[in-house]
Image 1 (cartoon, helix red, strand yellow):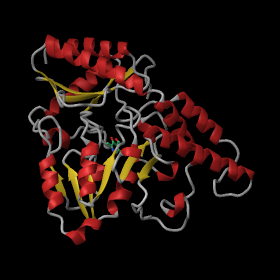
Image 2 (tube, helix red, strand yellow):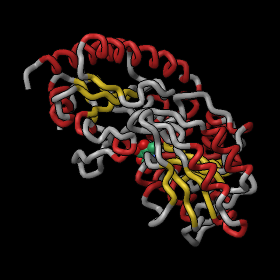
Image 3 (cartoon, rainbow, N blue to C red):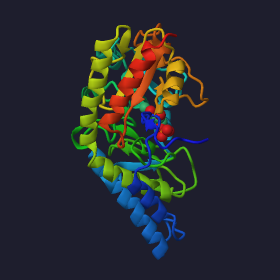
Length: 370
Ligand code: PLP
């Protein structure tokens, strides 16, 4: 399949383009054979690459390098953390890799702006039997992948800490887009993924706060302090580390993007009626807009945008390639218009002119008769 060079890529929440420094780091790691566990020079060099990447990641999220455990991605990170616990309290808008780990869980509803119901969470925390506390985990994502809506993570972490319950946050979409500092937060675990920040797919990490367990599901190796056995993905980890280092210096770009995104939405709302922005009044990460145009199905809009040279997505990207109805928008009470919602998500390579072109094409498409 040919991807036009001139296309504007606005689907970074699905995956971001590889950063050139990540490509260079991976090419370097593809050199001589290197197993980080080997004691010879080749092995020591590999260990250096892995520990360097761990330090870069720790700098990006503000934690100690020893708090970072490398995994195969956000999905594995979410699964590994949550599978250790018998009881899960989670929100209605989580990624499937959180929602489907437990057959039964307590679900926290969200309001029409996508914010979780803190009173419900407080009630659930207060109702946990003392003997169940060490077996219970609360999991709430920091930024939603469809709407970009941010949750009050520090407040939730503090509520969980006071209740003596572990707190996990899926931070896959916030990392690299907002300043983070875990040293002052009460979060017990966080999940991270490389390919959302310009690293390769197939590598991620868990941030594990000292004192919290990480039981290895796989047996037979001592890597990652026995917490995640298996020979390290050296090439992927090298790319992750390089992307993390660059992302650290790039947060300002996402702050600027929030202005471009807001200008785009303001123009859409001003010029045409029938436009709705989901989560538009809540705090959001700067790169995401979830927007619907009355009478235009998301599938048609995505195809029309594609023909016009713009890559956007319909709600959440689905692994089967089909557009399914969004549990996130349904939870926000937007089910009637959920099939019209498209997701626009900029990334490290996005320009102001990309959002301007998006606005022009959006209006053209909206004006066309259906
Ligand atoms: N969590 C969120 C919020 C995501 O958006 C994604 C990917 O779309 C994941 C988890 C899964 O991450 P990965 O693709 O690295 O498994």
